[in-house]
Length: 415
Image (cartoon, rainbow, N blue to C red; front, side, top):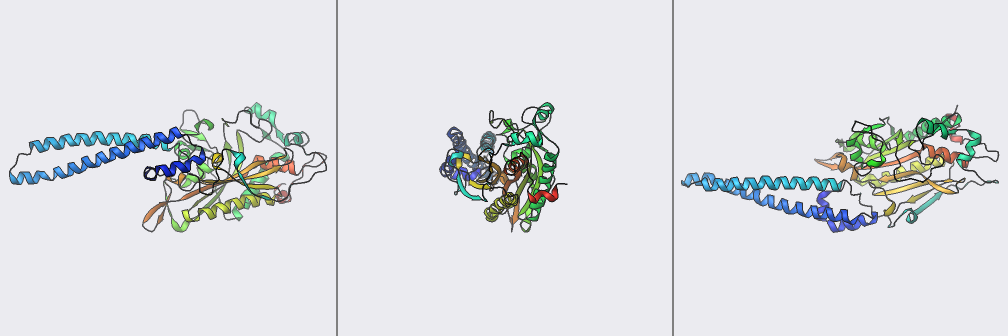
């Protein structure tokens, strides 16, 4: 969440920065109007409270001088009623302002380019070379006719469309990837944690999924609980409402979870295959750092995810997202896109974001800096989406006879 005091003091400057995210001007105008009203009411409240304090001091003087205090008492009672009413107004305005602020996105970092959509994202660099085939490479669903790793029909039977079942070597590959990714990340200094796949409303609000993106969440009926859309939510919220010791920062964590998303806004997109599922596995990176260190940590996380792909010998590229494609809570994001030769295109397989103090303010995650409590910066990113990594292996390691080889790095993990 944005700093409401800073917003009130520098409204035009912040509004201008938010234009990069194509934010609804009506929303900003409502925020401005409420902010001005709140400022006015607070000024009235301060005046009334100052008057109350000033006149209250007259009582002992009047009594000492033998003056009648009845009129003074009436004035104070009347002023007290005004204070109560004004206080109620300010609280109502604060609540309304807070509700709107919860759906205002994070301010983009200065390094984020302007742009309307993913077409305006900027490629940073390509890593490794594309595989060369002496035959026409197939897409993963065609390759699976021989491999029989993915059972789409039974996934639908068990649940509904956009669910699938992995079996045989496909299931073994999934398990191998989870273990390999976690080992890779822990060797880079990330501590492995295992967290619940169900989380509460407070946690989802803290990381920014609620209230804005409730339609994309699977809610548990009769409970204020939801299936997690990403491990970012429970892992970041491990430290919600806590004041951390400066010497313990940065905190670097990695976790494997299932992720659950309704994909409410993706009707008609990627309906074939395993690209966009309602349930998928992912290994996540989450970091909590001091503000001065977050850019360095961000680069470390990008390198960790990229090196993981390189260790699997998968060609990929790094892409800096423009303002129009930047996520709600992100101040800066680098997507890692893996090459899929069967589809003849790059597809996102990891997204690394620095949210700065946006989530920390909502989650009240602070650290002790001398005598002061300061907000931390939080960062998160995929390392990697497991289903998409399986797809990338299938399409990049396919043979002319339809077989799929296993990357050397995974051989020790598949038994």
